[in-house]
Amino acid sequence: MIAYTEKDAASVVNVFKGIAQRTVVISSQDVYRAYDILRQVEAGSPEPTPLTEESPLRSHYYPFKAMPQRPLNAPEDYEKILVEQRFMADPDLPSTVLRLPMVYGPNDPLRRLFPYLQRMDDRRPAIILEETYAQWRGSYGYVENVAAAIALAITDERATGRIYNVAAPSSPTEADWIKAIGQIADWPGKVIAIPKSQLPKSVEFPLNLVQDWVTDSSRIRTELGYTEPIPQAEAIQRTLVWERANPPANISQWAAPGLLDYAAEDQILETMRE
Image (cartoon, rainbow, N blue to C red; front, side, top):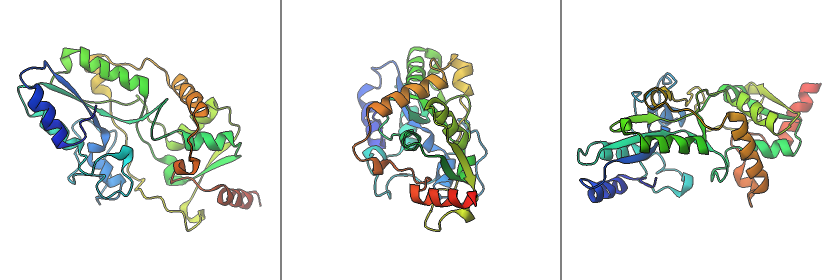
């Protein structure tokens, strides 16, 4: 769970090779080249999605190194590609790699659902998205479902030597994802997509949203018989209950970059009514 760097991986391999029966290594879907295209680190045509375990990997290492605030306080030399390679290269320590999606649920340190829920609980009449963002798709996974995939990979020897994507079986657009959250949150508002030209010039979304970030999880389903124990509606409901019971101390810290402030949103909504 904590092999973030090549050094971390080497330490585990050196200690346990020839002793442990197998390691199950937690990786990320950020290993794919699509992640660098999404972050505008690499130019070129978008990678076709859904991404399979054979899709091209990033050619640039250390994706968090230049970030002023690294996710989850990851070290500068965070690199799951090198972690994977170090484990999979040693014949004296058989390994399985799981590439996880964006994981949401109780205790999510990145509070992925909170920015939307806050607006819903504030009874905003609408959530406005730039139309490209509204149509963007990414792979999510509920924490207990992801945990079930990890447990399955640990207990099924057929996983030896294999790499698996883990993600929900479908990836709705961001607009539809917000609508699904809103339905569970009992929110009567609407999700409205508008062209970028209608947004305030100060609004900049720092991603190339032409690139979706969706992974194909059919391999782990076919080979190991994986299915999610918690359906999506229940997963969202459990997450919202936890989010409401545990509001973050600094709410402004969790403002999603693709969302407008309320004043700008109100101005656009007023213009639409005229």
